Length: 126
Image (tube, rainbow, N blue to C red; front, side, top):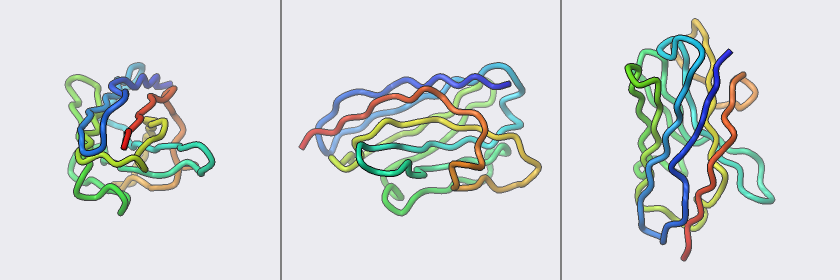
């Protein structure tokens, strides 16, 4: 069992930055692929970014590529999402997700992940 707790959300003006954190506990964090998803009102949950357990590979949705950066600190059992140049369309609840897998590449589908945090709200004003 893995417990995930997100933090760092808030209200920011367009063009601003935020850094989300996801603290993990319960199992060996370094064995887990990690990802961020977001869910905006009236829309389906959307993949944002993922990072492999090895910290070698990162993946991004086209909508955030070049603006967001996912990283992890296995010593601190934490994964981060640095969000720059925020836009109003980035407004959503952001969720951290985890899965332990022998695959070297994390997946973008939400159904692939079996541990989820409670989410943190990000609101970008225009």
